[in-house]
Image (cartoon, rainbow, N blue to C red):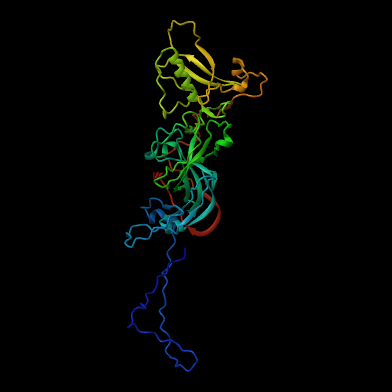
Amino acid sequence: MPPRKSRTPRASSSNSHAPTPPQPTNGNGNSNSKTPPTVTKEEPEPERERTDWSKFEENDPNFDGFKIKMRKIDQPEPPLSKKRKRDEPLYSTPNHQPNPFDVEELDLVYSVAPAHYWEDTSRYRKFTVFDKTFEVNDFVFVRPSAELERENAHITSWVAKVLEVRAGDEQHVYLRVYWMYRPEDLPYPGRRPYHGLNEIIATNDMQIIDATTVQDSANVIHYVEEENRSQLLEGDQLFWRQTFDLLHDKKTPGLSELNKHCICKTPFNPSHDLIQCDSCDRWLHAPCIEEKVLQAVHKERGLPFAKKQRGKRKSSVSGGAVIPDPEASFKAEVVAGTHRTVVRITDLRTGTEDTKEEKSWEEEIKCLLCKNIIDANANGGSNDEANGEENGHENGISVVALAERHNDSLAAKIEEDGNVKPKTETKIEDTDETTDAPFQSLKKRRLNV
């Protein structure tokens, strides 16, 4: 940004008594004044001294990171306050951040403060921490601050998408990022029943962080239900399918909607099976099927049944099956074979005198919506078929086995050195330009929700 120049005050045209400066005349007989016109020369502001990054901490020991001011594209820029406080930081010229994701509208206009520090950095395409190189548009794991950490979050580190790399020198490297929220980071009620264990949410919550807080690269995929419904997600595979607009209107929820299925009319959880009925082609949640079967089994035997509470998080080691209540008498689990899908029922009662009933058996599944057998195209079949043995049939139940295999090693892949700040230098390379532009360092994650 070029140095600002002050404007010299001029006489008002509405003042009839203001003296008129002498004007030169043309060559048509009018007298010419030999007095030259009066001109007041504007004095430019002296150029600001650029930041000496080698003495940055010494010169500004109170610097606590860059701040970002954001607004939607269609929102007008707020007018500058006439009574701006002297200690209020000056923000940089507004810039447009295009949407880095391929869905929804998450672009915005942002400004950075303090502007003079941000403008004294240079832009780069790559940066290196701990001998590992990262690039713009990469997903990265970020070390969380202890005071903002969520104890119940399955994903222990923060995840961010790198939008821009800025640096004053190798010791002052900053990343402008969009945060990828964990379900626990969302506004109330936070994690929903349909959120998978390794699911994150794309947001336009922008912040500028110190590059030394980056721990590792993050492998994140965009999960599109219509395209990835039959994809089996690996145990530690991070994925996103929803977006959250931090600047959403109060009349809208901000969180994008997902397709709804089954009799409960809710989205499906990729940690659980999703089953399609051959008769009506509609999709059913395996936990809903299991709950209905348990309800019927208990009713047939005159036993009480405690309906499972919606929204209660299931165990990560259950494989999608309904976890029996401590006082439950039976357990049900949907078993998907190669050509048939059945529900396996297990008697959990101990010391029962009823020896005629088997401890475990299988039953056909009726669709919760159309009430027909869901694998009508299987043409009968046996329990061997339900267990997945070959029988020559070409048609059968469509089952989406999207269960994420639980892997406790996800956190182990990330360095657990949150209290140790690296002493090694942060390398930067591949500069794009040397023009001045904004950047900020961050010690805490801010959730403006």
